[in-house]
Each structure stands twice: as structure tokens, then as C-alpha cells.
Amino acid sequence: MWARPAAAAEPWLLLAGPRVRWSLAALAPVGGRMEEPGPGSSGPGDAPPAAKRRRLLAGEEKRPGPGERYVPPPRKRNPGVSFSEPHFAETRYYFEGGLRKVRPYHFDFQTYCKGRWVGKSLLHVFSTEFRAQPLDSYRAAASAGRLRLNEQPVRDLSVVLKNNDFLRNTVHRHEPPVTAQPIQILVENDEVVVVDKPSSLPVHPCGRFRHNTVIFILGKEHNLKELHTIHRLDRMTSGVLMFAKTAEVSKRIDEQVRQRQLEKEYVCRVLGEFPENEVTCEEPILVVSYKVGVCRVDPKGKSCKTVFQRLSYNGKTSVVKCFPYTGRTHQIRVHLQFLGYPIVNDPIYNMEAWGPTKGKGGEINKTDEELLRALVEEHRSKQSLSILDVSEEDLRPIVGSKECDHSGYCTKPVEIMPISTDSCRTEDSKDQKEAEIQACLQNSDTRPETHEANPEGASSSGNQDGHTEEKDPLCEECKIVRQDPSPRELVMYLHALRYKGAEFEYNSKMPDWALEDWDES
Image (cartoon, rainbow, N blue to C red):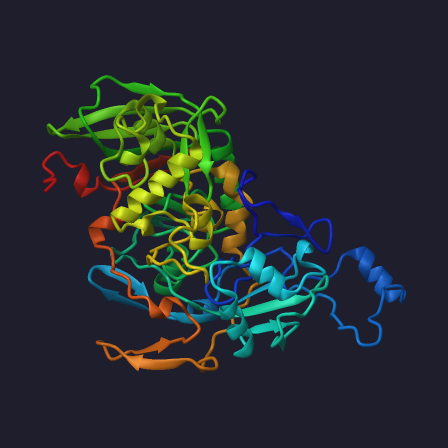
């Protein structure tokens, strides 16, 4: 089942039966935020609840009256595991300017009607929940046949939704670029695959990232499929990342994680002269915003512990080893900020928005709302909003609508890379991600529709490498020219150096920026 951390900002809704749950943003035509349903969720193949099946067999289920729209019952779920060749064949990679890029592609998102949508029109749902685009965009999508209700095109958005309505939405996906640095396989045997993850790559599909993820690259380029994620790293964190090849191996190592038997060692480069003696930080950490991905030290937060040891100091910055004994979101980064030694190029915790001391000692002197607004505005001024994993839809409640016109378009182009459910942010948090990770890895209910021909109205144009680049007139992303980040901007100086369990130990080499003779210029 596609699941979220228990404390996620968006609530869960109970649909169809007592064990069928859906996330908020599974449908958003032409530019809205959306998510893919995971296995075990109420996907297009789920059977109806047992009680409803009995009523249907007994003829007790209410049938549509004259003129009422008939809604077919959910179909039996199609079993399966992992991502398959049709998923990998949706598009292809190309490399440019030190970046790995993905050709834009058309993709179908699908969901059953949410409980709160029943009795509401599609127009109402789009106008209240998916405001990233003006209503005219959704009307155009319907006119072009991009929206389907129970596999029939929806031309009229005034249609009223019913329970078990199945919605399918064709969108044009643009994935953000990531570093072209290859994924190095450190160990592969019958039980595990261990890789050295480059910075900027999410572990698994989330938000706008699908093909530019470790899971997809391993499947497409190394034929490593049906992998079970044991732990994960933040998108901007590099280093040792483990996958199990079987559920049994995954459960065995999971138990070590739960029992705190897994030793983790990170290395980072921080501002200033870090103390030579060992430093322990046990300040509790509270999530300020799941959407933006910001945490801070707070007495109401979750308990955690990190031990730090300085390796070197070059007069400006220090290289520090980090030993996290717990796995809270952004734990190492938040503790270093609290101690007054933020990671040199941390795009969140080394910002002026935190105040003159940048949050040292927990001194912020801002409300959470003021802090989030200041962070967004600082990145906007630096034209680096893409580093904040948040969509325009989520950005507006933070900064208001003063820069957006009446149609909903922002007058300043906003570069965004939304990350849903924080699944790309947590550095190593097993207790928050187990169900979610398994859903991502075993995404068998959502079968992508790979479009051989362009949808109605789509056009193509050639580019410099001779590839025919598909343009979609309904896609706002196709109308925006975004400046690519430099490969250096996609690196944060935090690296998972070693993971050690009861029966294994996996190491990666020290990154260049952590060496004593590294030239910071």
C-alpha cells in the first residue's frame, strides 16, 4: 500500500473498505500535483469490500435509476512486484552539460474517487484542490480527451462524482535533471546490492522524479529489478545505499535497523573550526514543514542523538565524521546547525533566513511561518527555488498570492521540484518509511500507459542532437525555458561513508571534497 509517514502533512482518507486508503494528490490534470497509487491500494484492479460483494450477489446493492450514471465495480487487482519493462520504456535518458536528463513523456495517472469528492463535480474538485493551473487548463484537458471517467472520455467537468468512479488522467511529465555521475555498484551478491549513490538522485520515484531515481536507473541500466529498499538517503546526500534482493534478507536487516544494531558513519564539510574533541548532540528535532522539508531543534520534537568527530580543518572549513544513533529527518544537518557549524553548501540550514547566527543554539526569533517565508524568498532572490522541494500549489500558502495574477499564474517563473510525502528527504528513517518504500518498489497496481502516438494537439520539433522533442500545447512546462543547474550545485557536502551490521560492513571511498588537500575554489 502506498503509505506516508505517520506525521505527514496531508491526511489519509478511508475509501471503499476498511483497509483501502488513498493519498490526497493522485489526480491533477495538466500540471497539478499528483502521485502514483501503490500496491495494495485501491487501484483499478482492487475488488470491492466483502460486504459489498455479498450485497451485489444478493441483488441488494442499489442500481442506477433512469438517467443515472452507472459506475462499474472495481476490478480484481492484478498481482505483481517491482517496476517492469513497460515502466522503463516510457522514455529515455540523455546527457548534457554534466547532467542526466529525461525526455518529457506522456503518462497516465489513475485513482478511484476520494471519499470527500463523492457528490462533488469534477469542476469543484479541480477548483478547490488542484489550483496550480487555472480552470481553463483543466477544461482544455477534458476537451482534448485527456480525462477519462471509468475509461470513457470526460468532456463536461460538471459531471458529479460517485463512489468507485475510476479516474484516469494523461499528463506530460518533465523530470528535473540530476547529476550525470554514474551510480557505482560497491557490492552485488545473492542477497544484496550496495551502491554509492550520487548526490541529487532520489532513491525511488516521488514527486516529479521517476526515471531520474536510483531504482529506475538500476533497473534500466543494470538490469537490477525487484529490489527491496533497506534504508534510504536524502536526495542531496551521497554515499552507501543498500538494497535487498529478497524479502527475507530485507526483513533480517530491517530487524537490525529496528534494534539499533546498524552502525552508520557519515562525513561532511562544515563552516568554521569544529572542536577537536568529540561532540555529542542530543537535541530533539521537530518537523517545521513536511512540504518544504524543514526541521528544527525543539523540546516538543523527537529524541535523537548524533556524535561528531573532527577530521581536519583548513582555516575556513572543517571535515567532520558523523555517527547518527537515530534516524530523524535531516538529523545530522539540524544538529550541526544547532551547534553553529552548518554544512558548507546546505541549501536549507546554512541560509540567512535563520537569522544572524543561522539558527545556532536554536536561536531563530521567527515563527515557523515567518521562517518558511524567509527561506522561500531567499531562494527566490538567488534564483534557486528548485532546491526547495515544493510545488507552486504548496508555495502560495507560504508566500501569499501577491505575485500571482487573477488567473493563478505567477508573474515570476518559479523553478520547483516538488517532492511528495517527504519520501526523498529523510536521510535514514526506517520507522517512518517502511510501508511507503515497499509501495514504491512494488508498484504493481499502476500500469503506465505508454503513448506511441502524441495525444490530441501535441506537436514535435527537432533539437540539437537530432532527437524529435515532443511539445504538448496543454503543458505549461513546455512553455517555460528553465536554466539548468550546474553539476556543482547538485552536490551537498554530506556523504554516507559506512554502514555496518551484524554480518556485513559496506564502505565507500572518501569524497573529493572531504580530502585534506581539497581546493575549495
